[in-house]
Each structure stands twice: as C-alpha cells, then as structure tokens.
Length: 154
View (cartoon, rainbow, N blue to C red):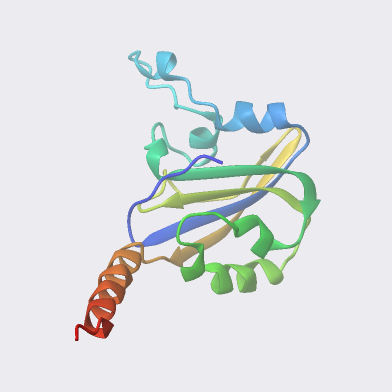
C-alpha cells in the first residue's frame, strides 16, 4: 500500500486488474519520459485521468489477492478512512461489482477524475468524499487537554 495525505477531500476509485503486473504497470511512474519536452504523462493512471503529473505523496493504492464486494475491508488501514467509509460504502453499494483494487487520492486529484479501462483492467471512479485529516490532530489535542484535567494531584 502506498500512502500519502493532504487536503480535505479524497477521490476514490475501485478496480479489477487481471494480474499484479498489470496493476504495477498502470500505477508505475516513469520520470525519464516526463523530463523531456514532449510532456509525456508520469504514469498510465495519469493518462487515464487526463493529467501529465500528480504528486504521488497524496496517492494510496492497494491490490488484494481476491476480488471482493466488501469495500469496508478494502478501506481498512487507509488514511483517515473513518471520515469517509460510510459515504463510500453507500456509493459502492449502488453498483457493487467484485473488485481487487482501491485507489485514493487526497486533495486536488490528478486531472479529471473519471473511470478508465483497457486490456486486463477496469478502474471505476466512485466519487469525491469529505475527509478531515486535521481532525485527528485536533482530537489528539483535545484528548491530551482532557487527560490533563483528569489528573488529580493530592
């Protein structure tokens, strides 16, 4: 799982890839070609979104061995998922298809967020969801302040 954080929104895709190699190829970044004058996209994912570049620090990708319709299980361990899981489950349940990949982009996403498909893969854009990464630090500060108030010094 790649990770990254930023922004107050998260764009989410689910996918079905026929092989791990196809998944790695689709999300693999090629910096050599982007350095040239032609402005080739950084990855096939960028191409599918109509973008040349994105900051991979804000991208999380995961491929699981077995296809599933349990979107909650796919979200486990992803950044700030507690903020958008319920909304995402509702969006997914409107058209639940077996999937073995999940992709999350935090903040301003790459290009026009859209579904994409090709030989051996389908990537379905589920939507953009509210996400509040700052809430974790605010809650931690509030919990620390609350703990300090509960400490009793005789």
